[in-house]
Length: 309
Image 1 (tube, helix red, strand yellow):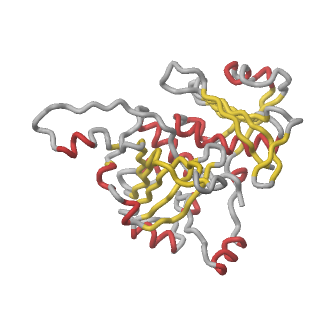
Image 2 (image 1 turned 30 degrees about the horizontal axis):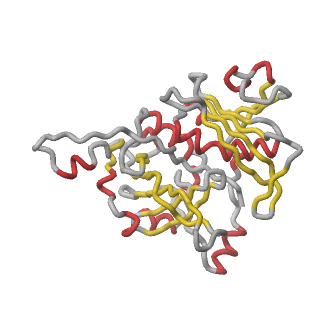
Image 3 (image 1 turned 90 degrees about the horizontal axis):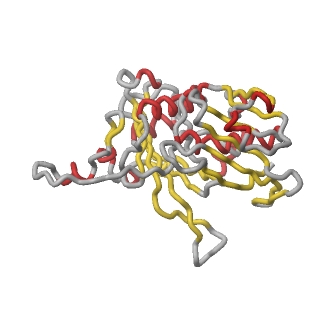
């Protein structure tokens, strides 16, 4: 099974929120003043997790985040059929949840609080430029992020184009029974390397902001050569790191992505080839990831994690 399947999710950036004292505003207007992206309102889908089918669960081992994906009845019906063309009104929703340690059973990680929400809404004509799907991204309070919505939408669509044979939907229904599981194990999966290409870049040709993050012994690196690079926002940078880590471990080279502005980037590399880490009984390398902090004066984001072979 692939260690990484791209899914288009955003990072946690809180939007400042103030409430007007206008007597004309309704309570719902005050509560969800910034709850709309691409005409998709968070308030239109309240309690979806109680009403819709749970499709699947994914886990980001580098960030400890759990993702729960849900589908309304129409989307779920066509997902079961393996549809490549979802009908109007199909909707998928995802919740990103930070896992925490279970104090009563420390070896277990359990869901904590929600960190973000994402929606995919099928409306072919309205969202023609993004393959008939409208994307909406909200923080834990149901508010939009303070980034360009057109860029966010284009980035989501570029990522989901990795799976056109699934109707641009990454999620597949969990196979839980014995016989379903056997079927799932024999199903051919599309590896990211079949859809996303990389090109080699010599150290002297690397952008300066990438070069200064790498060990001085670096001679060669790999760069993502895909349309995703054209539409980078904070969510893209967060979601792309596992793919960069996978390619870095595979090739033993630093791997990076950089936007057209030559300022927005993420790079992942093995910190020390001599020291191995272990996770779930598998050997791996300690990775360092660095990415630009968009829209702030803060220094670049850095995090370290173990990525298994």
